[in-house]
Each structure stands twice: as C-alpha cells, then as structure tokens.
Image 1 (cartoon, one colour):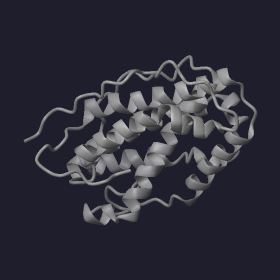
Image 2 (image 1 turned 90 degrees about the vertical axis):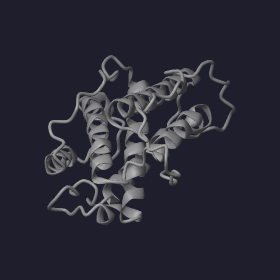
Image 3 (image 1 turned 60 degrees about the vertical axis):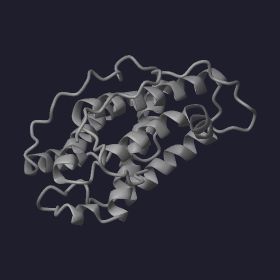
Image 4 (image 1 turned 90 degrees about the horizontal axis):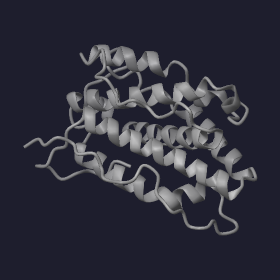
Length: 226
C-alpha cells in the first residue's frame, strides 16, 4: 500500500540553541544542535526507498534537481566564493547530467518544487544551507555508488545514470575542504547560530521537496540509506 509522504513536523529553525561550549567547531555545532533534523530525514528517506525502482529514483532525482537549483543560486553570490576554497564543489555539469537523466526516465520537465528560501539569506545562513545541502546530496550519491544501485536499476552513463554514476572524488575533496575552512575560521556565537539556522532551512527544504515528489512504501522494511 502506498501512502502520501507526510512532511516531517519539525520547526524550520530549532530554538533556542544551547550556548556554544568552548572548543566546538562550526560543523560540530551543526551536528549537535541540528542533528535531529538529519535523523528525521534519514528515517523518511529509508521509508521512501528512493533507489527501489526507476520510478522511485526518478522522483528522488527530481528532488535533487531542485536542491541543486537552490544551491546554484547561492553559487551566484561572489561573497560565497570568497569562502569556498575549491570550485569543484559546484560541479557545474551536474545540472545538465540530471536533466538528461530525467529525460531518459521520462520525468522531464520535473514537477514544480516548493518556493525556495535561499533568497535574502545572510552570508552565514547561506553557507549553512550550502554546506548542509551539498553534504546531503554527496552522502546519498556516495551511498548509491558504494552499493552499485545504478546497476541494480539498469542505468548506465548513456541512459538515466549519468549523474548517479559520475565520479565523486573532486566533489568529496571540495566539500571536506569547505568543512576545514569553516572549522578553522573564528566565528562569533551569533554567526554560528546563523550557520546552523541556514542548514536547518536546507533540511526543511528537502522535507518539503520529498513531500511533493515521493511516496513511501509502508509494506516493506526500510534499508539504511544514510
């Protein structure tokens, strides 16, 4: 039996945040202050099983396409690029690979996404959104490749699997470099709060997109996805 995916009932920005203990890096603070949001999303993705069938994958790829559109708006900000140490994080060809795959999967044009909230973010909020979104997309792509899920779905680099099968080494190194830069910089408590708030908005955005694009399977046991 298929039931509509119900958006997770968590606040857009958790509040109040606990005072920052001395010695916590920015990414540690994100894990500790907003990690429960990541756990909610992990559980939701496990239930949905986005790699179970090509239909499920097409729905999830639509979600990832909208997530990428959000971060591409952030990459257009010169102030963001003064912080990002490695341009490979943006992986500009991703959008065209996703578009070609969605055509192959007969899922183009993608269903409309909820209105993004990336407009009007401050620098630290934007960095939090970007860091969280890129981390989520990268972790799912790495998991899919490690389990050969593209082969399981019958996808190839010529048909539906360009994005799923593309090398991840450069993106992985660039994302880790961004984490190192964020953790080595000196940010105030308020800046850290803005960073976690931006990441929380990104988690909430993913939840909205999932509620629009995907349906869970209640009749099967979920597999660990993240």
